Image 1 (cartoon, protein in one colour):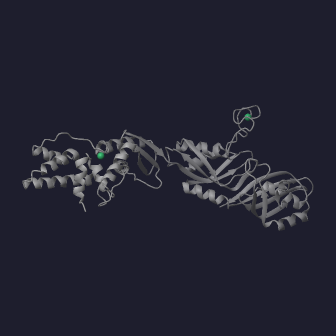
Image 2 (spheres, rainbow, N blue to C red):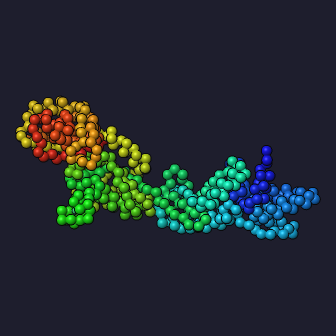
Length: 442
Ligand SMILES: [Zn+2]
Ligand SMILES: [Zn+2]
């Protein structure tokens, strides 16, 4: 088997390689040593061997020394070769990186990044690197030509070295899984981009009055352009829950945009009371991420006074968004519905209704009012109904059901598309339904 020194010498005979680009090809041997040290040490030992042969009057060794000096570009070897009065013809640049992988370049790049990172609040970071295709190809070509199987990618040298310098200056660690900021460097053009990863805040919202949709609702007539029907606002409703919560947060976090995630949704005319509905606000490209959330909570509640109220704000993660979405399908919800019927409601039938609607599986075809989603039959559990007569034709229901069950249709039957239903059971038609979400259980 060919030794490492012989292999390194064959590589240097053919290609000019800097310390990083030579050392990197042996990266998985003796972990813990930097690639620069690997490359430099290989060259130093090659030169020492050449020196030994020269001392034993093996004059062929002069060529070895010259090759290592010229193609290795190592300052110690060059200095020594010059000391022996060898003519060093030309100092070449590295075949792979074209001379870009140097400590000066890494430091210069790191310092520029540190300067710009001062604009951001973050507790950890990650460096990524883009490599021009022709550089990557040369690195791969050498690995293939010399059958090198214990090297690593050129990207690793760049990200590791710059990461170490920034860690040292800013006293903040590199984080691989969920970094606050990611910096993508291109050492070959001397440029970089900073990507500030999203901040997630979770909490609960109460919707204190109806007619506030969860997301902005564009005018159906003009599709947002503005018309007489919408008073030239382009919208069906002037407010939305996501804007009432998201807009103040944008300012606090100096973020570019936000995305509002909620655990299910309520109809636009349904209020949300009790403990509120869980939501997560995702703030994109934030410059601030150490915001006092009680101050944000106060600001939102002040701006949205009487419309929306948020509570229990805390920091969350991307995983919380996934978990919340997965859970909202199996979440149960409790509603309060004040229903006015066409004719007087029989007390006995109301009692029968409460007995019947207990852990009952409801078959529900997609409500006729929802035209945009495909037609299907949902089977969801209704856990209980409590009823209290508030007038001859007026009943207040408390209904607890599995997430995803459309409650209005349970009350009015939706022309027989939801069975069983309250209207059929009571034998009278609801003419007015006021619905609120009392509780969303996780
Ligand atoms: Zn190089
Ligand atoms: Zn309009």
